[in-house]
Length: 352
Image (cartoon, rainbow, N blue to C red; front, side, top):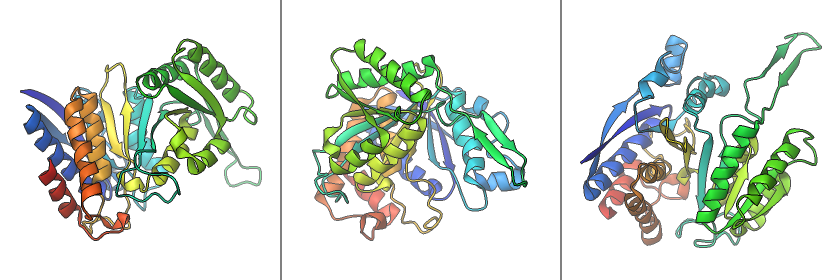
């Protein structure tokens, strides 16, 4: 029996509540398909640890994760610790240290979930946002000067490298070839005079190398509007770090709830472990109440299964999710129901 080594990082807030259901689902589907998991849980890598010890994770944290096949993360962030401290202390070092340069966010409207967008219906909206994940607008270059004085200033540099953009674009174009053959690039070259024209040039260059893909580019502001006006038109959307971050959260809301949205931080070369996480964040307002929606974490686990070479098992999980949403009225409060996390998980396990 194949035994996959999985790192579990529950993190903060509802992260500690949604990872156990994801683990239950993984074990159930693994038994069905003849493979198993060995888990190492890093329960104290969190904001609580930061407040106690001044660091989100130990100095050798990446070394502790390095031999794992994949990482399943719950959520990061909690009141009392600034978001830039929590993210740059845990999530971002993992992404960058393990060259997880593709952030992959599938967007699907499930039957049984009403989108707030008219016309965004089940079967019509099914696309994916491919976000650059380690450079772009989220660089570490910059600083603050003259703090506390009238002339105080902050400088933040965006970094776009040919290697970094090209490898992301090739991943996105390859994905488009396997899907519907359509790709949309998010740009803002009418206002950002250096990095975005460079991005556009590389999109055209890689597009020429993928003649089976029909591609277009859209200014990100117009693209955001079209996500709302006509989300069914999209198949693969590729974007820089900042634009992809914003667009993928908007798209998750179009799909009905960020509570069901998964994400993958991928190292496509598989020289380092990839990391999978729900989009919903730590939701401290409902933490500890047992009502968190586990679907984001469970869907992220399904993406992990596919990455580990078990596409049939991944389909079993997504089919069970589709079945529970289409065939029952069981919903957690974020979807308008009254079910607890445990009740929803038990029903999903029953379907599996």
